[in-house]
Image (cartoon, helix red, strand yellow):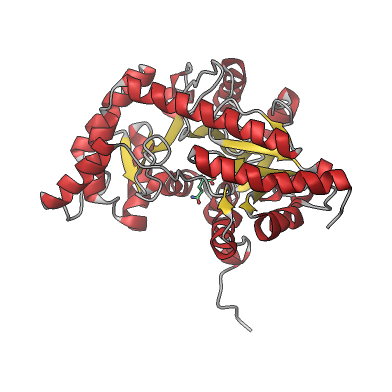
Length: 394
Ligand code: GLN
């Protein structure tokens, strides 16, 4: 009998990250799973959204983004990276970077073409590949520094390679790709005429002197890079769903068409607020990074006290931790136990790997939370230590 659900939709499961949020709510657990801040967005940005609605900016914006917002994005990009982009032909405003990524994949990849993906990877890239018909080629990032093997990367590229997905600073590992690493990737993109699709949503969340280098600034990469970004993480408005993709005019043409028929456009009043956000002074980004440094150090300490072996991130707002000391068979059972019995929700490591067993010894914590939230989680996680010391295997 004919199946009513498509093969595409059958090939992937519901997002584990979003599922963990629902479990956290059900069990009253502290949610260190889904990466969204539990503190307020900047006052000026919230005010601008309210003002825009009051001023009746409530109908469709131009499908590829309100002019004022695109102009502000172009200014910010130039200030931050020196890159000049034309807001008329090189920017597409989307519903979050999530739509930016899938619109880009659908615009760039033909079924059967290969896309290189560093692993562990943010879970959306798996379904993005399936929906666009891409054949993923995974290249491992290995702890403790989450570096990759140059030969493994080189052999992942061939004539069928259409694109590489690069997320730096990286979710879930916190890795920030170095210039040397980016040069290697860029050389392969040039050699095989492939596109770099970069997810740079954590660009301002950097620690210990790590520097974010946009792929588009590397030689020969400006016109073969699609830079995806969003307001979500930088301005603590993950629920607004306002993102953007920056690419050369021919690539932007493709992205804009797909975007138009997927969603028509992102929320018009929130794009007005986006224009205000993009014009915030440099000190805003400095303070953002400092506040996240404090949260990172706090959660690293708390995890250490609870007996985790955690990998210190250089960027983004996640910590991968090794769960081997707790004697569980796998990450999913451990995450279930944490959310149900300990009262803390995390994301099982297998969500970030195409072969679940490769992520079975990790879980991911997020630290985009108030100090009191992190401390409450830390307190609860101490129960785990007692169990570990007692040698109890639940
Ligand atoms: N990027 C965030 C995370 O990895 C949120 C994901 C989502 O639910 N959109 O947790």
